Amino acid sequence: MDKELVAYLDERFGRIDVRFERIDERFEKIDERFSAMDNRLDRIEDSVQGARIEVESLRGDIRLVAEGVSMGFYEGLQPLRLDVASQIEDLRKTLHTSQSDLHRRLSLLEDWKRSTTTDPIALIRERFGIKPNS
Image (cartoon, rainbow, N blue to C red; front, side, top):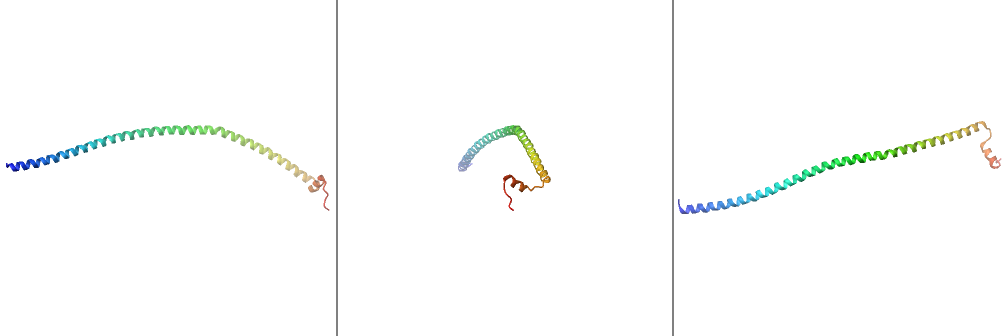
């Protein structure tokens, strides 16, 4: 082969080798970046999994707290219900007694009115010493 051709080919292959070395360096950097990204994704997956476990744990805790609050609320409300029911019953008895007493008094007045012929206004005037306007 011709020396010029050999020199040209050597130079040409030398430049190609340099380009391939640069490409290899770039691929190595890309591989490093991919490895770093894989590591970051692994850490993120671990964090997400840990967060899921925490959320599930919190759900259980919240359910227990809600049940406790609910039970405590109803247990605390029961004595109040009994007290209110007792007070309502006492009020009902008092009103019944008052209503019975008023009914009795009204019946007495109605009976008296039916049995008497005297004018009630005249009785009031007589009682307080007021002279009738004649």
